[in-house]
Image (cartoon, rainbow, N blue to C red; front, top):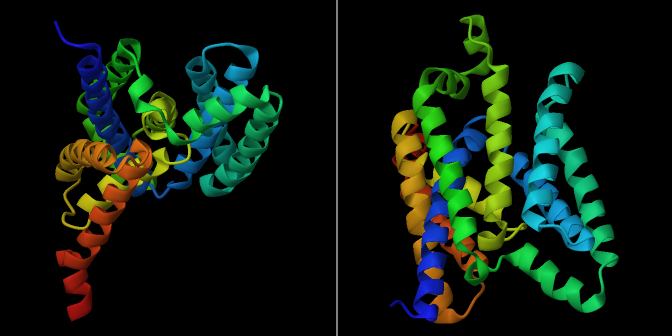
Length: 273
């Protein structure tokens, strides 16, 4: 029989790996499509939803998902119909969700607010359950399956959305799918990374891999591998230093990105020119 402590540790490690994989997969699209603000907007939408869930005594994950999906529904159609950049829409939604989150938290009893808010903000990886792992596993499977089945369409969007549409590809369903997957990824990663830090795990690993390759197939494959490794190293750093797990993962991913920029062959080419 596995002891309770070891079981909790194993669940946490598996959860960290799955979060690293899932966040990094969606991160490839976020970085390549230059909609990195989506990380801010989605993380704070999920944060606001989780805070409302705590206030209403409903599963915070469920309400976090609902808020994230509402944001995903708004970003695509509004930016398409209003001729505004998605970044503008995201900025407005970001500030609105921050305001809502703090209103919901202010209505909670003091003790509950302090403990629960910290858990949402910074993550609480040792409290994740088998159900949380199941949700993350299902999400990861869906994302990988969708990318494999519709690789041509997703690749076309990554290369150039306007050219893809000119080539006869209806990009809207796939673009909206990216937004929905981003929302689900952020929501399922709240317990592990925290609402304020999950953005870094979405952006940093793919940005690091992109310093070494132009091949999108390699980037899509290598980014989740690096994301998983980053989470494992961050988790180990947290155990050694007693830092929060989410913070440790972000520190590791940021250091790896900084190193990649310094040693990147792309940078050397630019310098030579």
